[in-house]
Length: 441
Image 1 (spheres, rainbow, N blue to C red):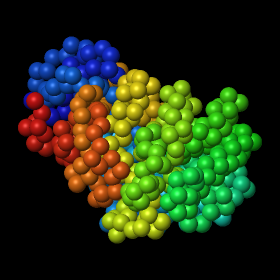
Image 2 (cartoon, one colour; image 1 turned 90 degrees about the horizontal axis):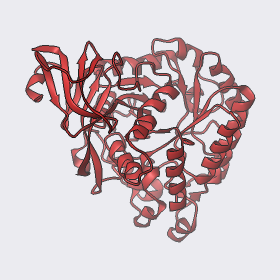
Image 3 (cartoon, helix red, strand yellow; image 1 turned 120 degrees about the vertical axis):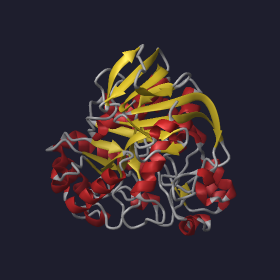
């Protein structure tokens, strides 16, 4: 039996036709009725096959906060969630603002070998918003950085943002903006500004703090002829701006998180710091606008904004707790429950917003391919109707700030393959190819 030859039997490709897949040499060799002689086999009867998922927005915390997450543990969580590539955000310690630091993240990801880890470079040195980071050197490094972001902080100075857009245009880079005007958001703000925040006595910031930055940046993108990506869109107003900008031919893309597609500001009533996130949870009307925008293509992608935190940073009074939620392991079930469950997207649409479009935005040539012969065998197999009740204590992440704990979601990732190597199967992360036959049918 060949360790390199794998047959996936009877998968439903994008939820449509059923076929076998022969995987060999890291690529899909055959599709149709395939002989499984001398091959390992995964029985995929009743499972949906999608391209491996790609996350544009992951916080892996390493270097600097290995108590909350590491590149290895975050890679495990990604594999369990069906991801074959993640983009690791720059707000680490030290910040990923030099070629050397980008290569360190790149090398740690390769050493883990579970998903492709692509470092996101900082836009400005130390995320200070003043001086551009080593954008060109990071792009020319072996990490080949193409996405840059000060996520966690907004590039608030329009002159700095303009120069960054002009700089990355030369090598096809993109600036991913954390859209949050620091003056409108105000110091100490911890949630959406509205009737509920006033009643709870929590300092909030309004949606306009996001929307004015989105509006400014799409105009800067038009002026420079460069690309801007709007991270974690959270308001209906931002959707309107992005829709207008795309109609004008401006080169703008956008992402939405799973939690902004389902959770609302009403959850703050219990003061549970698990639900403290940046940008904040918004009212139901914003959630509905985000769902519609993802369905009609105004928003291009789903990105998790996976933000693990150690308990001593999260378990505080709401105003003092750290911002952020886990997302890698639950993203697919949430999107399936919200979007396919409400007939807003089919499986092909989910593949588009969680694999194809993220790969295109990030410039990943070997990810997000259609399921076809000679394509890289980056695959996710999903039980579409299985239900899972989320238990934060079973997470493979080091952190437990899971907003989905106790919720029942539909759609379970059963297997993940990275270039033909099974990295996750039936809830188990497989970090080596040895002895894998015993786990396969």
